[in-house]
Length: 184
Ligand code: SF4
Ligand code: SF4
Image (tube, rainbow, N blue to C red; front, side, top):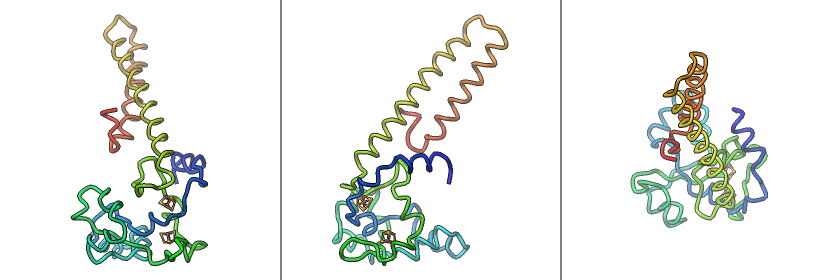
């Protein structure tokens, strides 16, 4: 587990979980179902564990009957496969709590985790995303400053330093590119 996730989980206030079971009742995978099966067949641990826990709903309508709000919250939901966990009890508690997998223990494991509407972590995750955005915006301001410096009479040593700093900022922005950091 990388440092960023560890740090995030350490700060995540577990008391915010409402124990509503929504994150176990109507769930989507990050890849299509047939790909998931293929990965599991090839021995991919997380795909094997996912399929052990989650059973696909017969169709999207069946998942909507259980929780239409969660389903409609997922982009392109008409073409997605939705799952429910075999181990979720009627009282919303987990029947294999002691042996549940990491994927369960860690959820939500990042500020950009896909969570059900009404999840107790919603507000906190929003704040976390805003914190990231703020720090990236600050870095972009610094980048503009360094870029402007490159157009002034400076020594080769200073030029190298500014280029290094710009590279570092670009790497940091790229790290969050899939979450839209280029547009923040
Ligand atoms: S194993 Fe337990 S915690 Fe994990 S998804 Fe199922 S019910 Fe939820
Ligand atoms: S949806 Fe959120 S609040 Fe509900 S059980 Fe899952 S993590 Fe907890």
